[in-house]
Length: 244
Image (tube, rainbow, N blue to C red; front, side, top):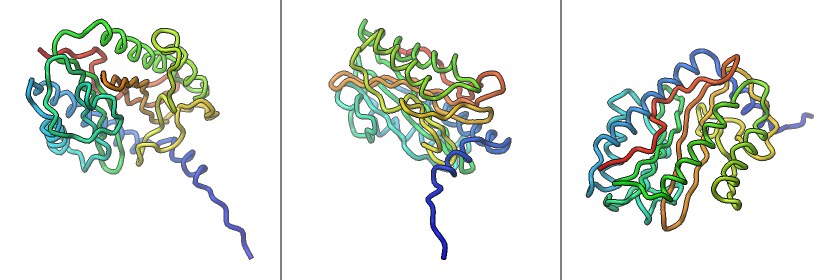
C-alpha cells in the first residue's frame, strides 16, 4: 500500500551543488582535459589525421592521470567540422581547415567538458568573425555567471548576442550545462530553465556555432560558482589558435 514517485529531477538538483572534494576532482579533470587539448594543438601539422590527433589527446589524458574519457570529438575542416559528435576518421588536416576539439576527461568519477577551435593557416575574415562572436558570447555568460542569476536569463543573453552580431536565425538548445559525474549532470542553461545559480555549482559554458560545409566553432570553459561570481578552472587560451 504505497505509491512510487520519480525523483530523478530532485536528485539532479541535489547533485548540482558540489562539496569540497567533488570540486577538487572537477578542477583536476579540467586541468587534465586542458593539458591534453593544448598538447594536441602543439603537435598539429598538415597531413595529420583526425584519428592520430584523437590518439594524442587520449594518450595525454592518461599520462596526466585521467581514469577514462567519454565524448571526445576532433572535427576537421569543411567535411566534418560541423558534425557535433564527429568521430575521428582518416580525414587529413589541410591548409585552411578549421579544427574543433570537444573532449571530456574523467578524474575519480568527475568529468570536465571543454572545447577549443584552431585554424590552419591565416584565417579568413568569415572565420575570424564567427569565432569572435562565439568567444564574446561565451564571455558574456562568464561575466554574468554569479549566484542569484536565473539560467534562462543567461541563455537569452548569449543567444541574443549571436543573433544580433552574426545570425538572426541562430538556434541552440543550451549554452552550457551543469557537469559532475555525468556530462549533463543537472540543469542546462536553456530557454525555460528556472534554476537559479548558487555557490559550488559546476558548469561548462559554451555558445557553439556550426556551419555545414564550412566548419564548427566553439570555446568551452569549466567553471565553479563562487560567492560573488565564478572561477574558471580550465586552462585553455581564449584566442583562436592559428597553426602555420
